[in-house]
Each structure stands twice: as structure tokens, then as C-alpha cells.
Length: 88
Image (cartoon, rainbow, N blue to C red; front, top):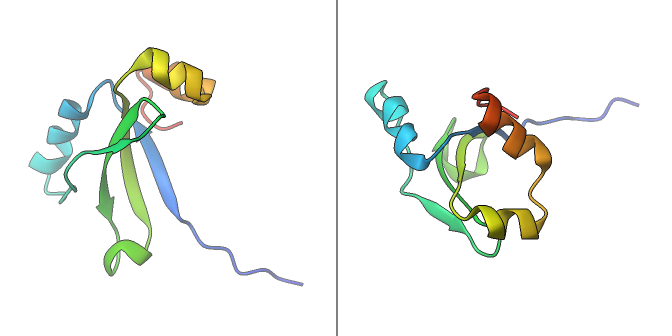
């Protein structure tokens, strides 16, 4: 049986949220920064479609590395940041 699949969001790792300004200059409308309590990360998002119920791009940065490591943030996040890759 075929299952309906939907894309929820795509995560793009940034060295810090100030780097998200480049996406705003390119015309994307990003939310204000939102911290992830207890995770050591923060993010800004841009919604694609009609509001928050639709797909979004999440620009994420580590705000507090020790807290992020203690929270179990995926190693892929730290690897993407170290490599300057962005998406993880």
C-alpha cells in the first residue's frame, strides 16, 4: 500500500544565526530567533506555503556548545558546522 509522505522541514546548519542575514538579503522572510530550551541551539525559519502548518526551512546554530553536546544534539550537526557544509 502506498503511504502519503510529506516533507516537514529541511535543516541548514549555520555557524551562528547572524549568518541567516544573507538569506534575508536574498529575499527570504525569516522568523525572529527562537531558542531550543535545554538543547543549546537556536533557529530562524522560513515557511514555504500557507503558514506554520506547511514545510519550512530551519536555519539552526549552536548557541551553547556544552549544552548542545549534553542534550544529545546529533554529531551530524557539529560535523556540518565544522565542514562548512550547511545542510545536515
